[in-house]
Image 1: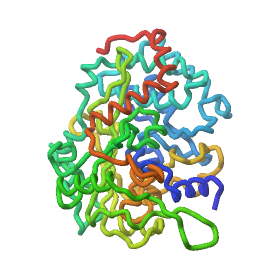
Image 2: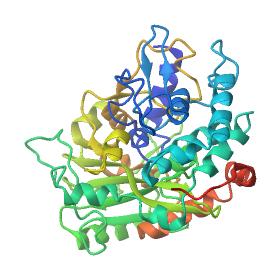
Image 3: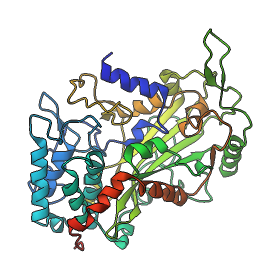
Length: 443
């Protein structure tokens, strides 16, 4: 096995993530070869500086000339990436700086019609800023980000992609055992009195902390659970887990070396239980505050068809016991305005792992032979172990007793994430560039 792929696989097997790697989500045709490399996303002119800038930071080229990343939800950038940093042969850093200068000089933000396009471009460039915040790109990226900023009222008026999808019945409402690989979207996911219970931590920590750390609070990740018995059954099970008086891990009595293994006495949820991870977009507003937007970026649901016996953490067991449904934001569909902008991830969709990959860039390390790989397989490659053992937000909260999980509201979880983000150095640096950005009122 190749070194880079071995490292990724090892991390997935260990399950360090607090949720599933696929929840970071690559967008439409995830990491497929770009079928429209000159698409005019943000301005009707494909060569407008906004479109050029997006392609410059989002599209990666393989040695054979194939392009990836145009439709991806997040840029294909890793901690060790040289691309855009002035360390590659194509001089991508100079090209990026030139495009940022042109954007600022021409007031290009005023040529992007509609708050939705401005919001998405700001979101995409913010991800690049957080990745490159200590490089020479940071100041100009920060200025452009603030130029694109919307008012609080305009952010509130962004489309509620989940609600639009539900109203339009764009996806089936429930899991179908006859079609276990079919994407579905529950219409009552956010119903405070419905069967889905939003869960967080009872100690004030972030429930999907590895996700938040990886994406530095630019999205809010919220966890929901639904047992087949309805809301009261779900609440009873969550409370049972919270009040457990036994450790999650116990000493293994088999073998010479002492080790810790999953405690088989931890009660499992029943078959047909579902867990959902919802990712919603956060944006900086014109007043230098962070605001949760109505835009849902992705929804990943794991339906448990069976609970395998034992405590072994094998990917094949997870594939057999879990059905994965995933829905992600598609920029082009969103900009059309006549639908939610969400699309179902298919078995053919593939992605490059940007999470827990030891920071190595496969485009620069000649590790493309085995990539990209099927998006949905990354879920079951991370969420290993039978039943509740595979729910990382619970099982990876350490070997102590409590606190663990508790019912929470989505608003409370969002407040925790935003508060955490505001204490991060990358946010402080972005705010430092706000005055130089020349924030203007959107048209």
